[in-house]
Image 1 (cartoon, rainbow over the protein chains, first blue to last red):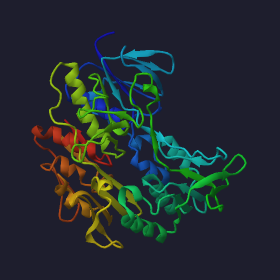
Image 2: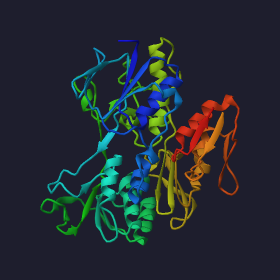
Image 3: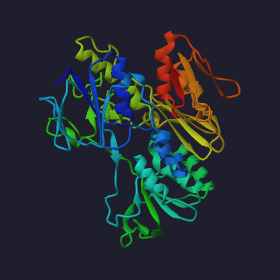
Amino acid sequence: MAGRRVVVVGASMGGLRAAEQLRAAGWTGGITVVGDEPHMPYNRPPLSKDVLAGDVTHAAVAFRPRTSCADVDWRLGEAVTGVDLEARRVRLAGGSSLSYAGLVVATGLRARRLGCPGPAVGRHVVRTLDDARRLRDALGPGRRVVIVGAGFIGCEVAATARLLGAEVTVVAPEAEPMYRPLGAELGAALRRRHTARGVRFELGRTVERLTGEGHVTGVVLDDGRTLAADAVVEAIGAVPNTEWLAGNSLDLTDGVRCDAALRVESRPDVVAVGDVARFANPRYDDVPRRVEHWSIPTDTARHAARTLAAHLSDTAPPAAPFAPLPGFWSDQYEDRLQSYGAPALGATDIRLLEGTWTTACAVGYHRDDTLVGVVSLTPGSHPLSTKYRSRLD
Amino acid sequence: MKVIVDMDRCQDHGQCVFSAPEVFRINDAGRLEFVAEPDDTLRDAVEDAADVCPLQAITIED
């Protein structure tokens, strides 16, 4: 082998950012990025919005890799099937293998699927560009769309589908949409906005089965009613892609467990980036969590690449622990949700900081009387939460 | 270093302002303003700003 190499497994945003940040951290050896999708890394937030609403190409959503990554070896459309962490060797689906000096786990998540019985055709998820294109063809005026799940993806797809004229029903077990990250009050505010646009909600309900011969025709709820459906969108969360790491005595119960430097179970030559990484954020507590925010691949890659580059060059890793300020946004109709901090940790003490629930509002989430998260729901693109962000530092 | 922002893409998220406040700011009208040719000492901050733009509207040319 000519020189030492870092293998990045996963060619989404996290894999790209890892490669870029390895170069930024001074790593001059080889970098190979392996991913099972055929596409170069692309930006996912448009998948539930612009890609569904129009004829968006891969080029329009593709990231532009930094020039420092011109010599990165991209192995696209190739799945990694396994790894031997002792031998430092990754196995590919085609039967070949890649040895490495350092490994970056960047395999992210895949959409969780409904476990209930029913036909296979007419069921959709929104995780990849190809998923979104398939769903786009199923949306349109008068099409009956049942969305299972009222989180980010479910709510954003509901908004886009309504804008396209579809008849939309959202089914979810929670009392309000986006209940878990936001709480009841803001969830209700969001629901009223959707309802005003014609979205129907079946909350506190679960799906028993799907009907149809070959193609989905309906969704049977746990109260026995059937909702007619031309398309079903399964927006019930995501599952970490960690099967390829099995056999290495790792704790893979929910992603990969990382230390404060983002090393996987403190192995010096393996780091993890993106939403597959489970790490404690010392801003809040010592509980390791996966974080599915758009900002996380970039934040984790910056830190993990420094850690790995330092190990490979026998220098000191970053002194400070990884402690990102979380943040997310969601655009639905002309409203923008913008969050900073960790609102879910302050869900038992929610206070309206500014505005009203029906127009524009900024909402504070407190733990032990301390502000731990701020979320605003604001028409247009100027979130009220922005000015509270500095209070979270 | 030259900073280019695709204003057709920009949706005023303002994340670039947090990464590189010396280069990006949201003006009183709520629109993005930026220094087109910032000093090279700000390169890391500007690269961070380009990374965190949700619309990926920022490019850097040398």
